[in-house]
Length: 320
Image 1: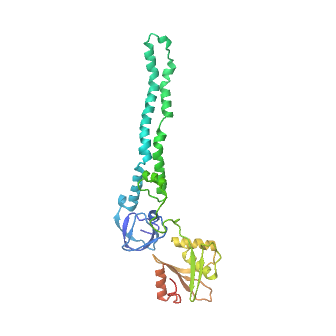
Image 2: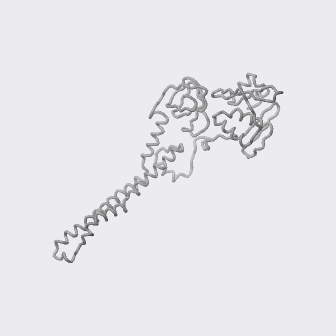
Image 3: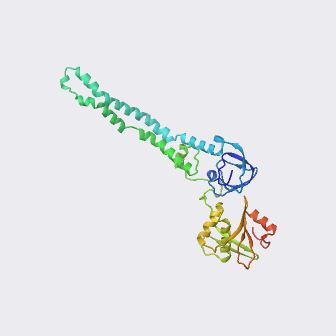
């Protein structure tokens, strides 16, 4: 599986590493790092992978994660709600039979009446217009169309299927189908299984904290302030320069904030990505200053760089 491709089946990573998005299953935009021994569900997209990773097939087709999701949606659409089974279906059967009986009577009675009336001694007193008899079938068909219960009987299933399909397009699987939708009308309280479930699915940059030897500078974007201090603007500029070619959702959040705040432009060279960890590069500075190494990524990755001594040791142990 290469970068930007979808996993075609449920599998076990044999070789390689990558960042995957499972938004089609969890609805969360946070990427998941996978390596040898990790399981990958069908439909997972490889957002960031410097080299293809190899999967050992575990489940395919209907047995895969995507297949089971599709089966749940199909089963939900087949379930009937109480309104449909308890009211509309029973009423529809009785109503349909009544309408058919009346339509047959409209078509047949004029002919029967004229035939019977012709045998009576007073036939001349009970005339039946021939045009009335010829138009009886047309009138019966017109009545059948006007009084047809199709809209009543079909309306509920169409509404249920439309609602379930709309939920599926938005990543919501309704277990129980129509019965669950009807039960929602009586729901007054909802309990969610974990903190962070109710999100927009989009990562945003909320805070920047610059740590120097002996002092810290902090800026929170939640208060709406876009005026940055020199240290914070420099940090945001360097981070945006590192993430400019990234496809990671965290990188998108940093770039979006940089576009709003417009910090000074920073140029880098010799960028190098470490799959599942982060990236590093060389910061271009004034000719009088020596090049500096910069990096962005997981905290474990930053710690390893600090331990190596390549990025200086003044910050080691000073950040959480």
